[in-house]
Image 1 (cartoon, rainbow over the protein chains, first blue to last red):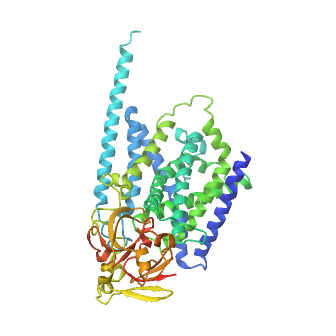
Image 2 (image 1 turned 180 degrees about the vertical axis):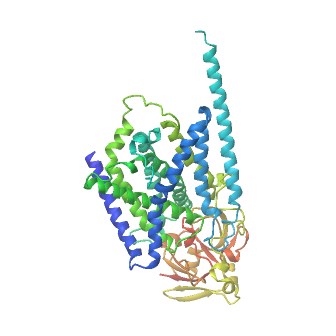
Image 3 (image 1 turned 45 degrees about the vertical axis):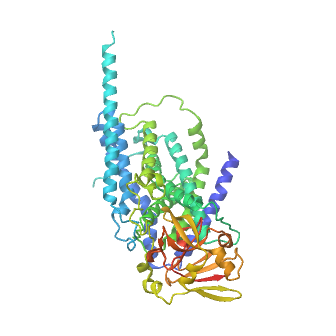
Length: 148
Length: 377
């Protein structure tokens, strides 16, 4: 265990140092636009911890309480998948800082692509939920039918 | 004044916060990040080769696979990172905030880890969309922070190794109490893997031919010129006029002297046809049929040995990709072409007319278009 930890920590520290040096090459001499880059660096954890995680947590809690048991897991999975697909689609849908036209790249319809993907995901959610609900009812009926 | 209702660590009772879940997702994330780092490093080394570095010209599809993996593993890392952070989210509320110097260092290292991984995934995702809402030069900063990310991951795994081993090898002493609501431990893990899988399937069509008509969020479409995407048009490169000038000549400079070739003279040389992929650093790739003069043949014609390195200059004067160096490994390969035709037609202006380099197993940005000069080094 001790050897494994040393074997991980030494190259880890070396990589960290090398990365810090490379980042330093970019960072210095300090200039105004560097501040924006630092914003991109600290922005991730800040936005996640202060906004994304609480919203996801509350949404998950709400769904868990409102949705009946057989539907709960598929609905939660569908919501999580939809959220992540939204994240992946965001830079394709909002290309205010996109490159000049590139035939064959970024000239499709990501909005339609996202809508169709979500339609497939939610069809599967509904099918899975329905199957689970039927199975749950079947199990309940069986246990009620069993003689005491 | 009312205080914000900040929860305590112990209030997070969901199964998703168990050490077993954290460890499993952490392991998955370590794998995807390592693949992403190594393939990104390969791409960086090909583009900025140190003297010790060697990159083969075969198999022709290798870079297509490594760079495809880079982007696919990066995409898969997004849901994995979010799930991992959700799993450990209660620790953010652990009190006291700092227990000791090592504890403070550990918390600081996690902040570095989280900042670096978020930065890499966010900037990478925007880069595949070729969307740049920042002022920095993407390759430089993405590369620097990649070292910080992989370094902090290694340190984090080393620090957490005992926890990781305990969580992955031992079954919990008693059956876990089912939480009042929400997903079970297994349910949370399944949802995480499923989300990573859906994310990959929704995007990987940019590089995986089988998924071409399945990936709704692929950034590659079928609207490319001559059936192939164009990363930089002749207009964007500012070469429309120069490339169509009838006075255009290809100049080939060797230690023995210089020779020029008109387009007609290049067409009169022996032609080679090759099926080669264009594989872009942004992760998209596509095969096409190319025809032109094989570079080893051209070198023999001008009296230079195949296997010599060549500096390739474009009519594109500005931007980082106007000049590239073709290493000897590639100039000796009979499939490295100075292409004049694409998919059975004269090369379109946007694909590099009058001629462009197309070599096996090379990043697209090094397949220099609108070539005006070759210098044997």
